[in-house]
Image (cartoon, rainbow, N blue to C red):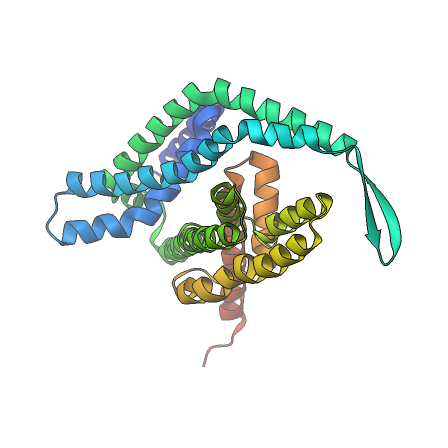
Amino acid sequence: MRSRQRVLAGLVVATGLATAILLWGVVSTVFFAITVAYVLYPLRRRLVDRGFGRRTAAAASTSVAFLAVAVLIVPPLWSLYRRRRALLSYLRSLPDSVSVELFGTPVGVELGTVVVFLRRALADLAVAAAGEAPVLGLKLFLFTLLVYAVLLRPSAAPAVVFRTVPDPYHDVVRRLHERVRDTLYAIYVLQGATALGTFVIALVVFWALGYEAAFGLAVVAGILQFVPVIGPSVLVVLVAATDLVAGDVPGAVTVTVLGLVFVGFLPDAVIRPQLAPYTADIPASLYFVGFTGGVLSVGLIGFIAGPLVVAVFAEAVDLLVADRSTAETPPG
């Protein structure tokens, strides 16, 4: 029987690798859908407890996921599309070099190479977005279908895992499950709520300061909230630098002070502590390493996969240390 189980386990691993290789183009979509379904399971369970059928609860939870993804994707693309001509005109109007006075000494800053790079990057982005539109539509459909399928029968996967894993290791599976759940909540719920708060505050700040692209800047600020350590502060610095290049020194100082305080600091100080007890306590350094390594290794989906892998690794180390401490402790 053990030999048969080993053969079957090897067959599962081999077919799983073959599936991953052949379907590599949608692996990120599948992973994203599974993690989103993981986070939405409590909502689905709450709807079922209140008398909704499992299909209705799964459909309602999937609709929440679909709307969240649409809200994340559509506003930046729409804002970029509306202001494409203004952005191109602005890039064309930038001089090749700028002289800035620091402590009474004029300092020349070359902008020619940066401007050319930005123009090419914007043109490449527009072409890539136009070419990838049908693919993005198919991936969005696949994402929605997978989330619904997972939420329709959420107990199927845990049942298979607990039947496969021997009884003495069930506590390990539960610990890893709790770590995965808390980490995904930290990424989606805590970061999402903080990003939404950042968007609202940034919209008010940039609108009050008279920026025409206040909505677009606020959207970018909210998205940058998902970038650990750096966050939306880098946007504030870039906006201030743009005002400084344009010769508006008071405006640059004002947006730097108000932006760093209200956009860069306030959402983290107000929203994050309220939700922190419901999420994993991941050190900022580990989160940043996971985020950066994940994005550089597997692309955009790495902002979820990277911190998740790091968190699971940290939990495995904690389990090993606890197990060794228990084994070395003398009885009695």
